[in-house]
Amino acid sequence: MKRLMLIIITIIFIAVLSCEKEKHEKQLHVKSDNTLLKINSFKDSHVSNKFDKGCIMTFSKKEDSKNEIILMQGTTVQHVIGRSIFIMKIDGTFQMFNSNDEKDIARINRDLIMAKITNNDYEVEIITHFQQNIRGSNLNKYYGTVKVRRKKDNCTNSIDYFGEMTC
Image (cartoon, rainbow, N blue to C red; front, side, top):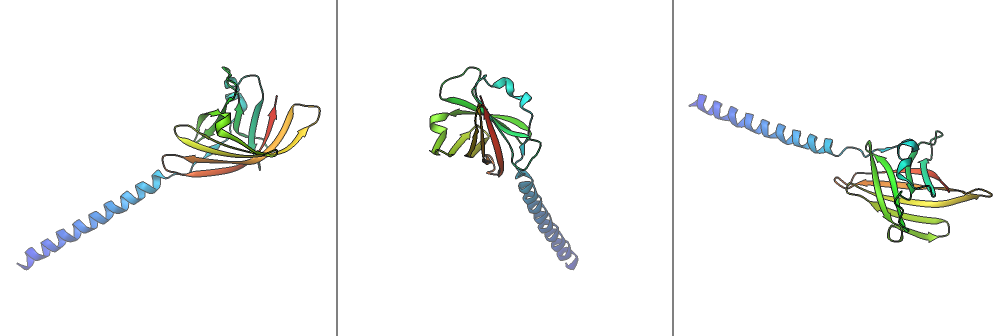
């Protein structure tokens, strides 16, 4: 009888331990799915064929002296007035965002523009401040912040940038 009680207690103890181990493994799995969102830089030559010959805005990491591009905005080859595209490299893959400029881009005042663009996987908010116009050229300089949210897990990342628009 004592031996039977000992076996039953041992089985219950093993069952409880295995449940705790399974619970711990599930928690680790959930944490590993919520990985950091990465905003990657890229060379303009990788995406320049997506844009028309009109004005193109390039956004580069603010603290980076190498001018590594993190976002480009322009019009598509099949240009429709009031529409533009944004291209970013997020989590290692190129992402394209189509924009209805009237709906997605708001000019707050002469020096501040805010944009909110989305695709199936990401939502991007861009705050842009006008810095200067270079006289005698078709070059404007900007600075601001790009904030990206991954829709599947709400993971976010933001980066400060400086930008140039050339026409």
